[in-house]
Every structure is written in C-alpha cells, then in structure tokens.
Length: 205
Image 1 (cartoon, helix red, strand yellow):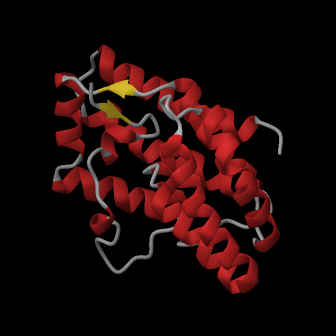
Image 2 (cartoon, rainbow, N blue to C red):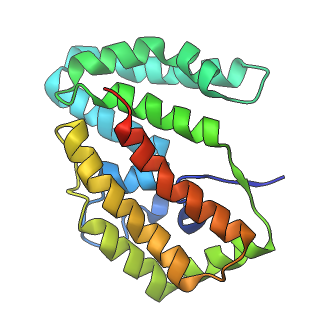
C-alpha cells in the first residue's frame, strides 16, 4: 500500500526536488523538515560542513553514501534501529563540522518520532485533501505562511529551531483543518501532526 509521510505529508505528498524553488525566496531547514526532504536537509548540512571544515566535509559526503548503502542492504523495512546503526559515523562527524552542534541528534530524534508514529495510508479522503492543499491558492497560502518562520538557513540552536518550527507546522495543520473535509483520516493526520514537533521539542538535548 502506498504511504504518506506523517510530518505534514498530506500537503507535501508527491513533491519533487524540482519543486523546491518556486520563487525567489530561499528555502531553509524549517521548510525541508516540514517536507521531510532528507535529500535537501543533507545538502544543507554538507554545505555548512564544507564551509566550516572542508576536510571533514569530504568524509561526511562519503559517509552519506555509506549510510544509503547500509540502509539498502538491510532486509527489513527501514526503521529507527537500522537508521541509528547506519548513521553513527556520519552523526559524529557532522557534529564536529557544524556550528549548530544540536542538529545531528535533533534530526535523529526527528526520525525516531516519525518512525514511532508510523506512516498514514493514502485513501480517497487523504487524496482529496492533498489535491485541495496542493491547489495553487492554498499551496501558496501555506508556503507564504511557512516562509515567515524559515530564515533560509539552519537555526543556531535547538531552542531557536523549536520556536520557529512549531508555528510553521501550524501553517500546514491549520490549512488542513480549514480547507479539507473533516473525516477520520484527516483528523488522524491533524492530531498526529500537531503533536509531533511539540513532543520533539520537549525532549532533552
């Protein structure tokens, strides 16, 4: 069965890298976390590492490829345990080359919350809602709202990230509540998505 990502995935389902830049504004970590776009998050982290410590950055880039190989080699469906097993080296190295020392652990905690919450299956109700939210006027409404909290880069601290990402996530959940038909599927997405980042930000560093 097809799956939809928990983290505001209804709005961002089916998006591609080519859609990341839709205007002159620069998308940052907040935006990419809401999309659960690991590729763009990884690119941001690698870019920051290259700027701070080019030698370690080369190792991080190689380790990123090893993480993908490790995950693809696992016979079971990817989960938090396999992610931790495959990401130890890269997490340690990125912490050394980033000014934002909190970020590697925060992203792993983010993945843990996602895996523990599980994915939501796409059905006729969620498809209908996805189509509504991806319609031009609602799509731009959400993006403009998220842009208020996304500085185009990586927040300097976990406290700053949490201060920004919780209201940014509300941009998506409010749109879901205001523009989608109220049914068990959309209610489940709304309830889980509204709790995800608040729970994540309550966790210890």
